[in-house]
Image 1 (cartoon, rainbow, N blue to C red):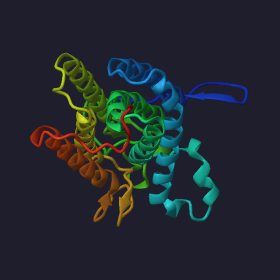
Image 2: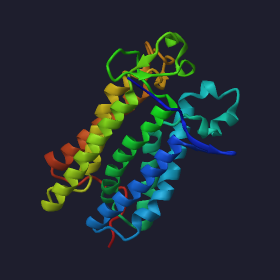
Image 3: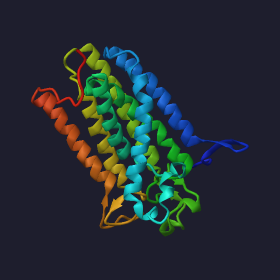
Image 4: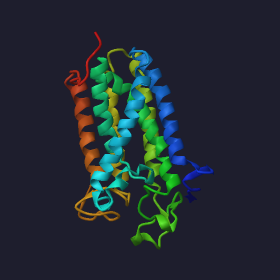
Amino acid sequence: MFASPGPELFQFGPFVLRWYGLLIAAAVLIGLNLSSRLAQQRKLENGLISDLLPLLVLCSVIGARIYYVAFEWHNYAATPLKALAIWEGGIAIHGALIAGTLTLILFCRWRQQSFWDVLDVLVPSVALGQAIGRWGNFFNSEAFGIPTDLPWKLFIPEFNRPIIYSNKEFFHPTFLYESLWNLALFIILILLFRWGAKHLNKLPAGAMSCTYLLGYSLGRVWIEGLRIDSLCIGALPPACEGGIRIAQLMSGVLALAGSVGLWWLYGRKKPLPDPGFRPN
């Protein structure tokens, strides 16, 4: 059993340093360093990742917030300005992935780079960043699952529990499940990248990206089934009974896309269509 020490690391006057913000900043810096190294090995343009990352992070955060608010509009309709209060929580990774992909397509067209080559050096950092960032949910006592008595159960303060579970104290630490899943996926992607570096022409552009889509989505499907704060269509959390969990639906679509991509690359032995441009 374990419990969160709270969302704030320390406070000095009006300045408050929150664990979530610190973890996100750490994930961005680690991702910048990692993807820059991978880009060098892929012989991509020098400075490409450092030019891309600030824009990518900004657009991804905005996309994550828009996505969340769109599906939770019933909570913002009366006070629309609250939709801007991102510091109060409420972002969705699938919104970040959609916005980030669109941003990357436009960036690659502008810089005349291969979309798939650039995406391949980014996805290990994305997986690692998700593994790190999920611990922000731990410190905020959020994104937890249904009640449980398992040895690794997570204590949730009463003010963070849904009303129907107000008499329950311990819940599935779904943030931990996803963090460990993403860490394992990161290791697989790095091993795959190293294997590809030693076996030229056996790891085509796009293979790592498709592996990420498939791997992350398969994990998210089963983990989301345990959560009690899912975005839903046709029902409301925490039960989501009779409704559709948006994250599971999106994960199913992305898993299918990743599977089709891998089949196209290795079964048909054809390159994926490139939304960007390759350098001359």
